[in-house]
Amino acid sequence: MKTIGVLTSGGDAPGMNAAIRAVVRTGAYNDMRTLGIIRGFNGLIHDEIQELDISAVGDILHRGGTILKTARSEEFKTEAGMQKAMEIIKKYGIEGIVVIGGDGSFRGARDLSRLGVPTIGLPGTIDNDIACTDYTIGFSTAINTVIDAINKLRDTASSHDRISIVEVMGRNAGDIALYSGIAGGAESIIVPELPFETDEICRRIIQGRNRGKQHSIIVLAEGVVLNKEISGTIELGKEIEAKTGLEVKVTILGHIQRGGSPTAFDRILASRMGARAVELLKQGIGNRVVGIRNNHIVDVEVEEALTMKRSFNQDLYRLAQILSM
Ligand SMILES: Nc1ncnc2c1ncn2[C@@H]1O[C@H](COP(=O)(O)OP(=O)(O)OP(=O)(O)O)[C@@H](O)[C@H]1O
Ligand SMILES: O=P(O)(O)OC[C@H]1O[C@](O)(CO)[C@@H](O)[C@@H]1O
Image (cartoon, rainbow, N blue to C red; front, top):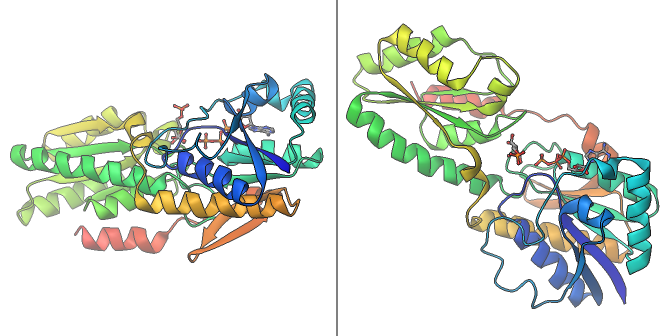
């Protein structure tokens, strides 16, 4: 019987539990034993390992977060840390690992594969910033959370004739802002991938007001602030207030975007990806990242996944602008 490990690493994302469940259960179906590694690579180094049988992953499909907990580990990146990891892998007879996380986690997966431990990466991050997949696990749930917030903010913004700025997550990527902005009918979407002008945003708001719009929603990706394109969302609000003469309220959604019961889309995606990871490990194949493209589950070499350029969906962005005239 083959023994495999599974861990979650980096930021958590709704749907990670569905992926863990899929790994454990498709593993058992294929006569494989799964060990859960707690707190990502940190737990691997510090021997936080526990066996997961098919019952251990019962009643988690609908839960946000990750039952395996997650962590970031600087120690793992060092030679000494990597050696510790290899000792634990030998101790438990682990013959393959599934790493659920973002691109940093995939670098760790690549390093383990290089040392002879077949390791498969599954894209688990709400940011949808992994180039080799159309969608990451957690993105669908995050945008639905944002849409729910936008719907509510729209109600109160309309009542008060206000402008509402919603800051959403996305350290380097504007997909959460773009998709939730288009689904939530935002007047403006500000993302790190594209330049923007405050004057143009104000012009659109005034134009909307002149034809009777009662509210204006601006969705802004946090990456714009983190990349220092603006000094802060509150400051941007003040600038827009001064330029339009309209009251502006800022809402920073933060970590509520990372929690909650995963959508059907995320559960199904995570289940399909987890099953592919097990298929690969069963054949002794590692050093690959699983993705979904045109609704087909695919897998690509980790290095290729890491160097692939992400393309921002400009067509969707243009459509959002047309629809919010
Ligand atoms: N270059 C690297 N080599 C080896 N391991 C790495 C490397 N980069 C990151 N890791 C490991 O992966 C962990 C998670 O990485 P990181 O903090 O970048 O999150 P992530 O996987 O990119 O997820 P998120 O996008 O949610 O932040 C790190 O704490 C570290 O243990
Ligand atoms: O607060 P944490 O856990 O360090 O992570 C925050 C980051 O994680 C992400 O949600 C990605 O998982 C980013 O959008 C955000 O900047």
